[in-house]
Length: 104
Image (cartoon, rainbow, N blue to C red):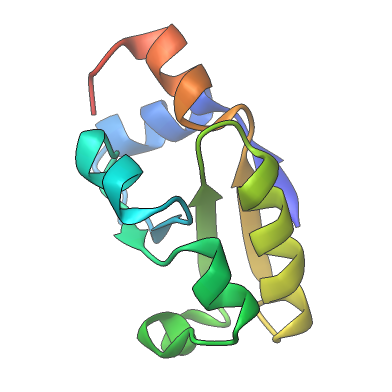
């Protein structure tokens, strides 16, 4: 697992890079605000229900949550499942909104 800053992620999004974003928050949090990630709550990852991203094991996965705690746990768990390039969004959505407001 590595970390990625909200600034670096925003630059990459603005350049139009194809990114594999995974939101590990709960559905209501995702509905309130998200930056385009596929929703897989942490509990599903811990239950090894990751079929929708299984084909991404060798690709970079940028994982985010509200503050960076759940996404850190998700990255560590995904690493044990054989995902090779997980990145945790430092500070999560709170850091994103502090830096960029509601810009996606």
